[in-house]
Image (cartoon, rainbow, N blue to C red; front, side, top):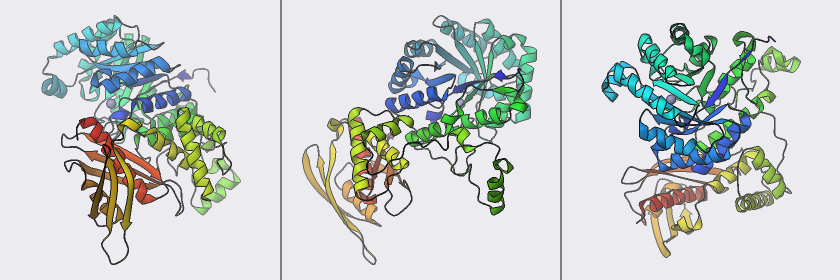
Length: 512
Ligand SMILES: [Zn+2]
């Protein structure tokens, strides 16, 4: 190992760019849970959100700034005063706050979106950086769509914002358009034309539209970039961002090539990946590098033989290194609250006393039915509990239901609901038991609310597996609400998930 190994800062934007993934929306508590795990993983900077975007975003950034120790806590702000002021109000509680401000610099964005001249854009950027500097020392600036900005102009912008006090310059390939050699050339030219960039942090933020996000980021590191912006599981806008676990394991496994490393505790990678996937509902492809289910599986006989002789024949990393084999707590029939609490903590799930008791009870109940309870079952039950609404927000309650189905007949269902305290009975027929039941529910509620998605997943193998149902609804105003339920009965899980989504829609609309 050489002494020249330099440290690459890992800037995690799972909670900002990652949360912009279509279909992934997180509650404030879920974001705090992920931030806590990111701190355990050892990321250098957490981009916690875009405070001006919504009150929920603001609250999440503020709470993370207040509670998470270790990483720098960063908020995003457009290059306008109101955004920067709002961002500071949220991040100021952190021990080490950062304001990240940006403005688009490519011709297409300047002409079509901003309608500003090159000089006006530079003036706005400088003004924004100075305003942010008035609040804190740590200021990051991004020329949005840098990947499609003329190199000369990009250098002009960077020179101006460094002079204004920016301490990190981030070069984003916002639309995932560049190729690794081009992106490397861009970073190399930046250091040549703006030598003062060597005294600050040069960062990159690459999107994966052509599948080049990780390759582009690494090509930039090779040219001297010292911060990489990335997301757990590579989630993010459209095709996503560079995947954190892939960046980190490239740098670690090929330290000989990059002469660089990170401060990430790689043994926390798998756990973090699973937590983010469970909370966002964004599944990980089985063949995903590092964290996919098949990443360390050997199928071909000749490979298995080789691995049995010596792991190094077909494995360039070992599974333990990324935290695959860390399951030290086994859940069984006699596991009490202690074991359940330890497991939830180990996995990064923060539950209160009451929620933990509920999970423990449910685990015992399942074990008593002679079901084998696996780690994933416990996590699914915990997810179900985290998603529960407080009692006063449950305006619709399920009192009971029946479904009649079989071969050669039309499934029929009836459902008894308590809606705002009034008992109502609905009936329906459908293509299958769930369809019939949902028709029965819809015979009692506002028909303008539509079911957009219905996803069913079996948690672990076997016909007695827990069923995990997640649904999405849309109201007349186009707002989307999600619902989720876990149950050993697949039909019950389905109807409970629908009712949980309907409660969210009703609470949001206020009336009926
Ligand atoms: Zn992005």
